[in-house]
Structure formats: structure tokens, C-alpha cells
Length: 72
Image (tube, rainbow, N blue to C red; front, side, top):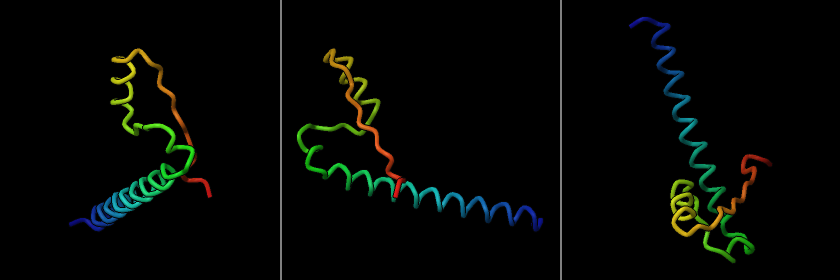
């Protein structure tokens, strides 16, 4: 196998692993944020497509809460 190809494959594998780890970290942060007391006062949906379908079915608007989970 070509050395450059081997290095590229190694880098891609590393990037995929880092992405998976960062996704897990973000999910943990999201779950922790959803434990906040003010967020317990309503039933939250974290699936955007489901929220859109529910809004269309009920005729209610979507209320979204955005946060910067990556911020220190």
C-alpha cells in the first residue's frame, strides 16, 4: 500500500473517531442541560422533524431553545 494512502486512511480514521467522541460529548451536555429546573416545566422534543410534524398536526408554533453547548 502506498505510504501516502496509508497516512490518509489513518487520518480519516482518527477524524471519524474524534467526531464520534465529540458527538457523545455534545449529547451528554444536552442531557445535562435538559435537567435544568426551568426546562422541566414543559415537555421538550429534541427531534426537529417530530417537532415539525407535531406543530403541523396541532397548528401550534415551534418554540425553540438554542444554546452554545461548546462554550466554556
